[in-house]
Length: 475
Image 1 (cartoon, rainbow, N blue to C red):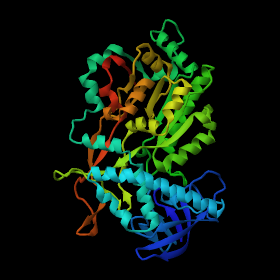
Image 2: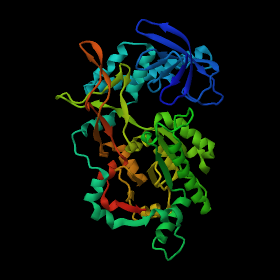
Image 3: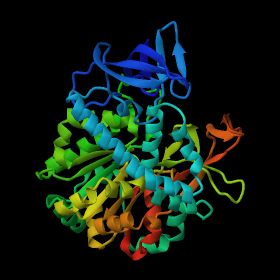
Image 4: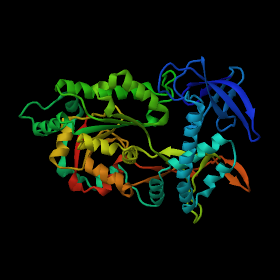
């Protein structure tokens, strides 16, 4: 039978054998061949067997649909499962065993402090999956535990019962102070006007911003929201969306085109933050378009930061981390504010510092976004601001604003993550739990959990309003 990723329609391979080890059946899936290099096992593949295989536990949580008529099964593997047990290494067997041993040892070393953290936070129920199931399943759970950002999780949990102010609330409460360092322009002005006329009131700001661009003192972070990708969009086998990819291309082509008009070289660093299932699509988009004229060595595509989904507390014991299965932690993206931690954990901040970057524009992927316009950068620079807010007056969503941060502000927040504000969003999530020594699947009929959310404006409470400026954009 063919094995296909349910979420994206990507062909993984074909079932070659089925083994039973007591707890459940284990599928040996021969991977489809791939003529491209540096692809993961979940990349686009054709139907020809290439001799490599992965193990897939034949359980409902991972193989929810089996179509006997189509000879096809849809799988929803936990993150990393296919890559974790991919048998494709062509190195000598002895060398592979040594590397596998080192990797297991490294994992165990990191797992010890992670277990202590779980015990400190009264979350030891997460460890039960390490006692049962197949080796692959236990390894997957161990990796998920190790990869949790414990400092951020503890801070987020402490924020559950604290008040959280949305961006409109923040802007409304501080409107008088914010207006002291602000300008108001039309969207049409930004698209077509380059302030070359010296009698233009924004000419000085425009020239100051252009200087920053020409000296490569800026960087871009584009936040890809998985919710922006419509399920109905038809993009063959890449898991992406024509809508989101089209917006991404328009955004970077517009940026590149602007720099060419000004006859300046495009050397700004670019960081793309994407949901896991869309990362390959955006990497291909960048590669296929020759990185839109950018230096490929200054481009990073990162997976968005996730934190465990936790239960709504019903007693003094507090919230509990929820499990999708005994070997998979239920997790959700934390929002655009996760880029602070990502830059630190991926060691990108030192790289940006070496490049001399002074300001970073962070924008969500939408049809209003305008990146690296000299007017934005010139205002932030002239005000010596740490934060510049680009507000679209027609936007209804509270997250629909772009922001420019000084590097000193990003470094400060990345190292003092407790300054970020979180809000707990009530949601319904199916999960498994142990009741009287038996695993029971819980199907809630009301909100039973919190998604820990942190938008990019969550750092504003730690920034002086005197160090904040605003560009108001109207239609």
